[in-house]
Image 1 (cartoon, rainbow, N blue to C red):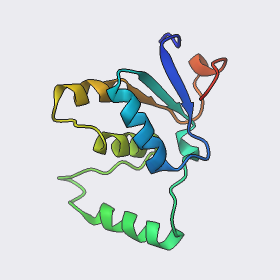
Image 2 (tube, rainbow, N blue to C red):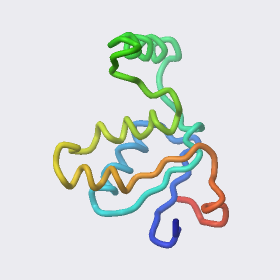
Image 3 (cartoon, rainbow, N blue to C red):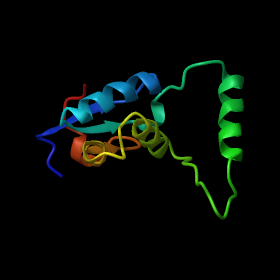
Length: 115
């Protein structure tokens, strides 16, 4: 993976929804984006209200039949960005393919300047 044409964004201490909206907009404009440190992205709001909302979200569906809910921080962030893209259209599907989300910082991006 060459990091020359990829915009690398450090997700540390960013609010999830605000970061996701910026990333979705830039993906639709044609940029390739990699988000690192996904485990440090912050979900804003009262702890108990966020927890209650998440538990209600997990109760939807059956554990064998689905829908299956992401539990890893990188998959959760991808799911949030996917909700902000027109994924039923060609441009939305192509934009989503240009998004990479990582837990921690991979070796390929160790020496790259983050946004």
